[in-house]
Length: 464
Ligand code: MG
Image (cartoon, rainbow, N blue to C red; front, top):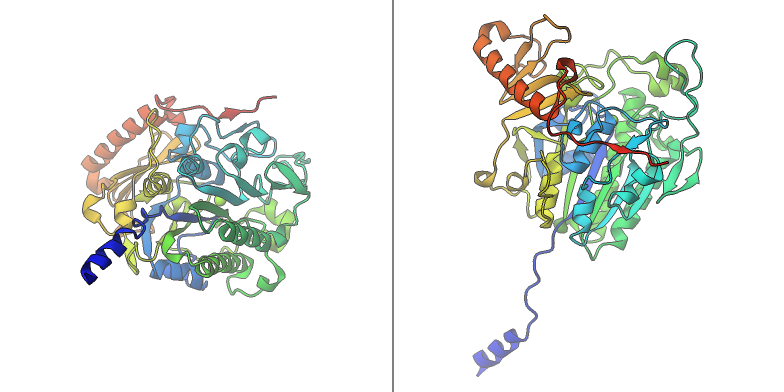
């Protein structure tokens, strides 16, 4: 009888809930070096919160930003494609009249289609006119600045006579409305975090996607007063400490709302760091844009160039308690646009079937099913429309700047700092890699070779 009653009781229990797709929080750091987090071996920065994401999840050693500058990298991350494919290959300015095309399907749109609430807090940089803003690309909420923190009226032309570039004061937008101009830049990190925490709290019962795109690690390095002059790595170090605090705040809010096990947190960067002094910015922002040329990085060179690792190889850590095993390290060759495909798969969203998507699905790798993971063996590096390097396995071929010069070949496993060119010892392999470059040219083009590329789509044009 008791057994019967128990059966009866069980039969009226609600059916088990279908597993909820994960919330996704992506912290997209601006211009932070691969080795500027302590979990990546920083020599002078301590980043306990990013380290915590790594130690409670997975750390990628060979993750590449899709570009060495902001706009193309962000276009690629949001569309799952090489930036060359979606037509945004250069940094946009407040005078630009292009942006992310309407026809592109962003990850925010894919997730929104699966019932996600979506927010972008921080920097956008994919077109500042209303038709290009995050609100037109699948984000329910946008609170931030439409382009970088160094695109204000203080900027002068780089060539003589040095005159104003005509940039307006930087606006702070909520949705599509300017709520402050000039935006009070040093106050923004804390206001962005308050907004992000509020968004998480308000959407704790439904899946959400939040991209927090910080600005303080991009020159000028302006931080709230309590972070100033604290880091032994100077003002840039203060900015990284502020970013690390921001990551901690988000983790804190997720824990407070009981969402740890329901939320994938990813921290990555859009490109490598500024490593050379930049006199124009120094002249305007003083110490807030003065690079310390004595500071050493493991990887060669930095932002603005994609030939060497420092421009594109960046940190990426991912945490999802109960789903991603803690303390993992992956040396797979992965790229920023893989996040698109991965987030879509985890959310149960179909990828657009009518176009090429370059992103690889990393979900099996994250979830500890390496047997189901289909690894990538080749990744191409571009500067604007010029193919400049290809990575294949652990090898990297750097294409020459000038016609007639030899390409360089590096073994990244033995020589991640790219100090020893091995091209003369491996001529057959160099020839094979050059054949791979021809495939990239046919697909994505190469301005240096006058090749247009068959599979490129146009950027959005301003409709006046
Ligand atoms: Mg950047």
